[in-house]
Image (cartoon, rainbow, N blue to C red; front, side):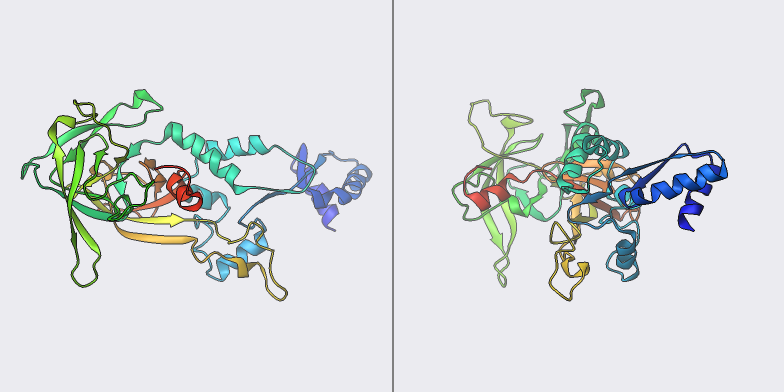
Length: 354
């Protein structure tokens, strides 16, 4: 009855090419026979291999199980391989189309590495996403020799891949935030970011040098850095030719905006979610770290009125978009894709520099 209904509905709707997955290939003779016997408009059935991606499931039955079991937050959860999920994650439509062009259409069942899709997304966003500065895990920095009450507006490039996007202005003042991971009190040899007695460049701003560290007396956690800046290094290099090995992003304490940032990772721990022990099902491979929510993040003031769906590159951090939950005064961003993390490779291999 299914083969009867399939061909008849396609004919009534004047479908020219009925595109099906490979399991319908054995049904095609009956599909054709019914249409020939009826003597009605005859569509052509064409079969192709189903798209499978690593670290996720594409089966509607399994996706429904995840939704009904509250393992994800609905069909548009950014971890889901649904159109609504990809849209909410921030994947540009042109990236999805380019991905489909890259992998092509096959008659053989195979699984595509999700990294191919993520690289396609990066390629598109690198060309189109405006650059902004955001600090996800803030560490307070006081620039002791910077004038109290002074605020400078510094020129920042919107997108170096597209000069037509121009520049924006970002405020700079005495107290700023940097990423907590950009400072180490006792750094290893290949760590070139901020450390006691070391000088680094602040993006679009100045060279600063760490002079002292403030810690919580009870926990011994670092709560504040005290630095000095060189006024002659504004916006670039030092006039005397001295070099620094790292450039850090930052936001000001007084002008930056609070934000929630949701860091999404693979939904499953294994490339093949069905690779389970006897008696288990695919849900045993769900990744408990597939979503990390960071509160207390800070973003530059240009994002105050950023509309839902807008995509940005947070400099040095990755690509992010404005979530549907975002509203004025309570900004929410989803991580669409990471940038390549060279320091993580250093920690693993002990080879390269950062």
